[in-house]
Amino acid sequence: MGSSEERVVAVIMVGGPTKGTRFRPLSLNTPKPLFPLAGQPMVHHPISGCKRIPNLAQIYLVGFYEEREFALYVSSISSELRVPVRYLKEDKPHGSAGGLYNFRDLIMEDNPSHIVLLNCDVCCSFPLPEMLEAHIRYGGMGTILVIKVSAESASQFGELVADPVTNELLHYTEKPETFVSDLINCGVYIFTPDIFTAIQGVSTQRKERADLRRLSSFEALQSATRSLPKDFVRLDQDILSPLAGKKQLYTYETMGFWEQIKTPGMSLKCSALYLSDTSSPFPIFWQVGMVQRVPPLLIGPNVSISANARIGAGVRLISCIILDDVEIKAGGDYNAKLGITILGEAVAVEDEVVVVNSMSSPTRLSMLVFRRK
Image (cartoon, rainbow, N blue to C red; front, side, top):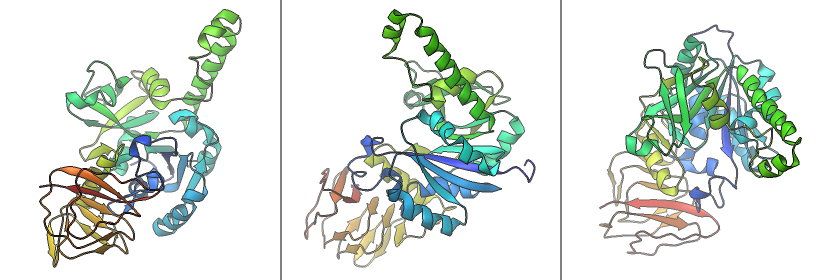
């Protein structure tokens, strides 16, 4: 590991209400980062991963949500983990790298040697201490967490080519039309503060190009619709792709689990992954990784039940996320076919009713049920 003086700051990008619309209706009332997975808010899992980093000075959450929506959670998690957590609201979209740059003065207040950057909607084992050791050993500006996936699914993500010996990033392309590699970007990064110089360079180049276009009104008219604001900088297209192959970026391959949490259905899979991760015991009212008979109930596998839930006799729960104050009345026959059901807070399921492949979408959503034969 590097010097004990090397302090680390973590930044978690949480998006906003106009982002993550594929996660609706679960995010209609509760901000997506606060939706519970394995009994804890989604953002709690990357925060807990960051907590394991040596010399961690501060965790920042950056997004477009109103500050009041995160105030209670930020206060409680700061006390629980004994590490300062602060929410920073962006005034406008700056892009994945521009958002980081926008708060550079705050981020650098603790004079960190390294900055961990994560996306909130990543479900991962978060091998951050090991990744940091590799990052320091590489001696580059940045290190990207990567994972091998099937060739069929690789094109849905940022694909990259790395040197098999040095792990240097040689080529990066975001969601290519043709197969490039089975190594993909996990949305977890560690940078030195030099990342701010790189982002500033992109902004400067963009401003210079805009100034040149003004020399020709015809060119300005043509380019106006496709040019980006100078302070809108994308991490993938504007930083990773141009710096690949220049001995500045490296990769660290995770052997743990990884998924993106983009849809309601994926929240179930990711909740199950966290429940099965024995290294992360989450304190919730009830969590079941395996099938357990709790007379008169049969619960599991992959069930989490929050406080104040009321479950009737004879109910069968399989791969469920049950939120606060949900009531499920008595049941009997639970041999339902494969499907996903989403029940809202104001919805009541009466005795002996089987709900399969249905969605009820009131103002607030309280339960997600996945039934398997």
